[in-house]
Length: 281
Image (cartoon, rainbow, N blue to C red; front, side):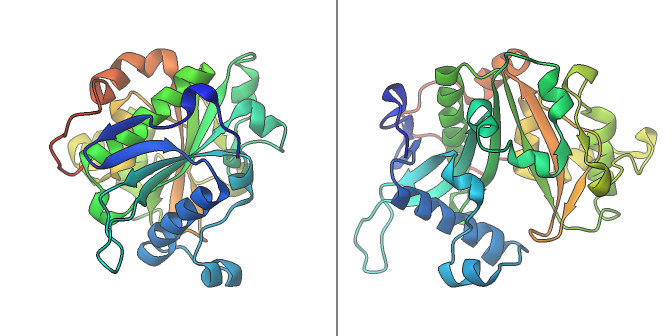
């Protein structure tokens, strides 16, 4: 596991919660167990035999990516003894690393080649495999994850964040309002446009713009997608149904130059003081 001088140790702390990068294979396995609980036990993902036996969400990209962890230092084990516990995670994959190992995970679902070609010399960072254990889905946990991402962005001079964001369910008709809202109100401009692969393309604009209630649609979106929108994110053209994970995926892009001020207003400030605990939504 690679370690970088300016990113070693804590990247932020609120109360008993700390955000840092995984420092060992053991840390990565702990993140994979959190992902298994979120995606397979709580969500609708279908595990293969190895995944079910190990109870870890493993992926080939885990080997080359960095893993951001939120750790609760006040967590108790089954014997009532304090033992630090990974409660949230994000996978971070830089463009220079991805290009040496076959590309981004997103390219399995979206044609991002033209997007990358329009921004030569830029450093893209792919965000993926985001999850937080249910009891920890609060404002401060989400805030710590994003503070960790921001430290990483600054350290590597990242120019844009990309990734697949998921809506629960594979029935696109049931998701028509949410997909149509993103299509009509948060579509990426031409210079940041990316399209779902032809073989997997699902049209997002199923409802006319005037028939979509923006407030109702926004309220129905997953907290992660709403967080992206608050930062100024935009979304690609076409969705992709992921039957293994039981989700419908959309492509998100966040140019750093365009989101920096909004990002700071939502996630800036000190991290060493306790924050009010409430759901992040």
